[in-house]
Length: 161
Image (cartoon, rainbow, N blue to C red; front, side, top):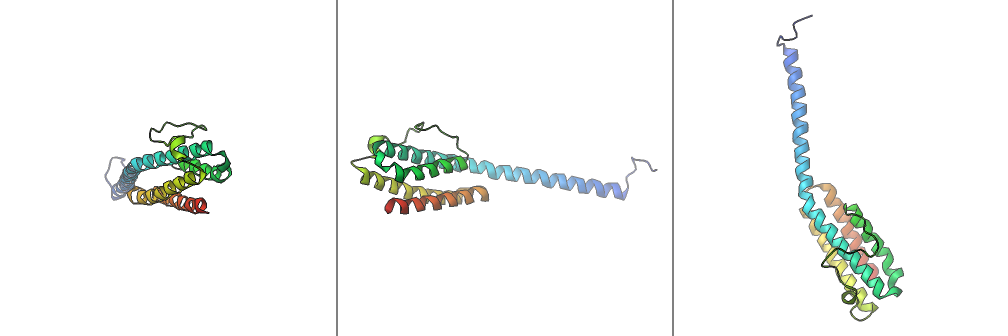
């Protein structure tokens, strides 16, 4: 057996291999962490937008219970979007958003106007999700936002028919 403190070519190559693997892993982690950190403001903004839509649908259903069968499934989809984005589950009727639309504002005069207001909100939301894709720090968030944006564009079609 040789002296363990002797510097051999084999020891140098082994140390270099382990060192480069560790360095690459450390660089990869910090790069990934930076990308995820850049997602945080985008994700937070999109969660808040989804919560406002949820509040708007709840207000519309409260003002026009006859629309529940039409609006209820879309409300459920928005709740799923918020959860997919990492938002906390909210109990039914909860609203901590200062800019959420009140029942009076979401139901200006009748059910048709309420649906038109929701349709416009869905158009804006679809455009906002697609714009969010370009600001996302990770492909994962960009992909999620594109899917949510497509869903919201489909809501426009549902609210048109």
